[in-house]
Image (cartoon, rainbow, N blue to C red):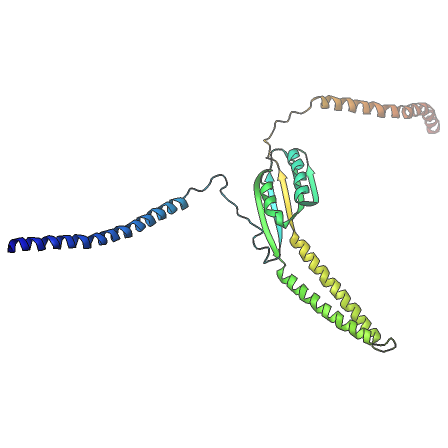
Length: 281
């Protein structure tokens, strides 16, 4: 009986241990599963981030000009140089480009052995990035220089001046209305009102110029063609024979002019010789 009771207690202890360890193992497995997921997801993200860079455009998009336009008043000035294979076709394409994005200030083109074309274009700043991307389709970019002029401080100062002149103009106008025409200060106040109006017009004009400069970006674009290889230049030999013939004709022309003078000299020679001999004797 004692042996049977001892075996029964031992069996109950094993079952209790198995029941207590089962939740622990389940909990450990539940903890391991998120860790495995995290490791796998992090590994996949790492593989996604480590990708080979595209060789189509090694420089990438290095210029995005319209990101801070709401904070800063920037005037863009850009110098570009391109090499194109067909300058005539590029000229036709660039005319459509100008009508699409802005207007041209000046242009010059030469179609000789080394053709080239220079343009100064004004492009809307809001379409500048799109215009630069389209320009890259017209040739191979050789040189690029992008600079900006910040007009933010100037705009703030001009607005301060404009608001101040508006307040000053209102005060002077009120003073002018309260002054009689025969008062001694009437002319002084009238001149002060005129001065405020002129200063206000000047400030408003400066504000307009700043907005116009910021609205239009300036592009100086140069298109050229590849330098051709040296060619063997064969002279035109017939020009030598033509030159000889022209020289002969010129000599005969001068001889014809000299014939009358030779005849006169011969006619006068014999009488003059007789007179010379007579006086000599």
